[in-house]
Amino acid sequence: MDITFASAPSATRNAQGLSTAHQRNRVRDRRNAGAAWYQRLAAVCVAAAATFASGGALAQSAPKPDWSLADMPSQADRIFVVTGGTSGMGFEDAKALSAAGARVIIAARNPERGAEAIASIRADDPDAQVQFEAVDLGDLASVRALAARLQAALPRIDGLINNAAIMAPPERGTSPDGLESQFAINYAGHFALTAELLPLLRKSDAPRVVTLSSVAAGRGRIDFEDLQSERAYDPYAAYAQSKLACLMFAMELQRRSDANGWGIRSVAAHPGIAVTELVARGPGLDSPQGQQWAANRDNFQTAAQGAIPTLFAATAPDAVGGAYYGPTGPQEISGPLGLATVPAAAQYPAASARLWSLTEQLTGSRFPAGAR
Image (cartoon, rainbow, N blue to C red):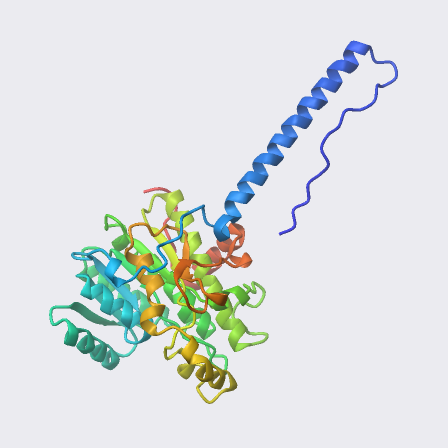
């Protein structure tokens, strides 16, 4: 961001015809004005430094690099909803949370895969409190139907993990609501689900919303002039935009929660690059990208390793609202847990607020205005 400051006021030379005393007063006034200007400039610089410190979040300490499931506190009597929990990192989230005592609702598209995921979890823990609920995040009617069912069935929600995603389908697809598929499933569906579940979240004593971004967000930009890639579709640019939007949403949700008294702790996370089904279901394993991915997969995270930043964000007492967690190795592809790099594009609240407003219009799901 380019910031241009006007030059500071300076004392002028004596004006012809003014008394010496009068001129001294004018010089003094201008000096005072100049001092005030510099104080304001210093305040702006301090505020800017605080805003951009640690990638745009408030200054915070990094998590324990070797944080693991053994460090997860008991989640007994807590209720979590995990989208995309039938495979990959979502499955690992559901498995770990249920093992820690939580009641887990896996929200995903395929009931058969949901049954398989539940059977796998219960094979290790027969007493696991885990259930499946069908939802298509690309269909806003399906999102609202899920929210209505949960409203009727649950006393509250303690944690919502916005995990489900698709990546880089070769051809541009659209949702039933006319949105580009990646924008719809990765971002807009989760935005709407969070809005619709906010009443249940606010019934929790300590609700959290964890939204999954990606290292790809660093290459993303929000194209407000072509948000749905109608003019030109680039699979990876659309994916990066959707994941940048997820990160901006997570940070804006924390700002709005603080301003409006919602009591939500909103945290963002990314897994690095993890071995999941995203590539196979997106560009395909036979694509050049798929072949490159397959050749390097030994350098990537397992799904269980990729889930660690999300589980930390969802359960650790010291996870900070508005923060962004992920692996800290080279290019954040893998490595110890830490604070992830917030892309410059996600550091401007005005852009996030603009995206938020547009998304409310596109989805018809609106968050409440004003304090509780």
